[in-house]
Image (tube, rainbow, N blue to C red; front, side, top):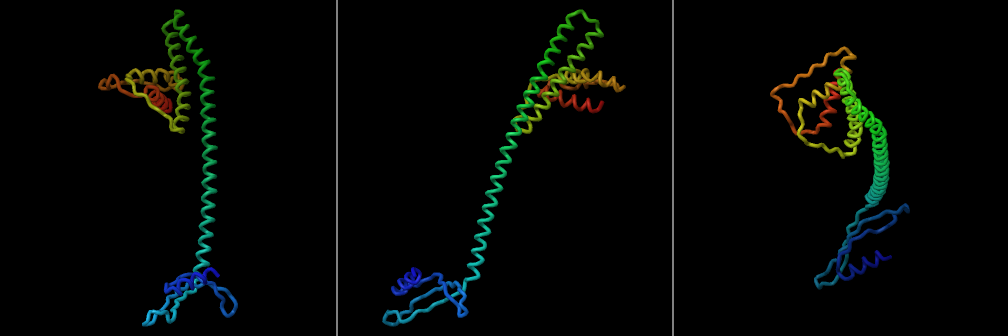
Length: 227
């Protein structure tokens, strides 16, 4: 009713009207048509008749409604997936936090007795050891340092995964670092009947800016795997 009222209000005042109308075919089925009605005026300016152009848009409207339903359904699916991804990320973050807390706790539990071992080594060094015994104590000390470095390796991996890894740059003697790493692996090489030689190129700079701990870990892993 409102549609027809708007239509007649427009054309009776000489304005064209465009809109959709619901109609019935002879077989009783409903259809939707897009209609454009324009008033035609005579020579005296009065409206003499009307011209109408109509198009059956039933199928177009049906397709548009289906597309709208598909779009709404797709938006619902996207929202569901977005919520699921957000939940999954929260669970992953919580798991990472729990893992980091566990690793930090384990690091503390291992470091405490290891520091005690290092302290005993200090006592042994001052107890009048022979040259051979002093060498063994030094090897134990280096092995303890290596174990602590391995713990740091695990913690570093956790930091890398969390995007919190930071490298330090300090002056480091590469020759001393290489000799120290090889010294800590000497016993392992001997047990496997592997001869471990250390050669430092004289042209190598006496010091470079690098992260000594991380470089030591890399060298230890490379040489240890080679052995």
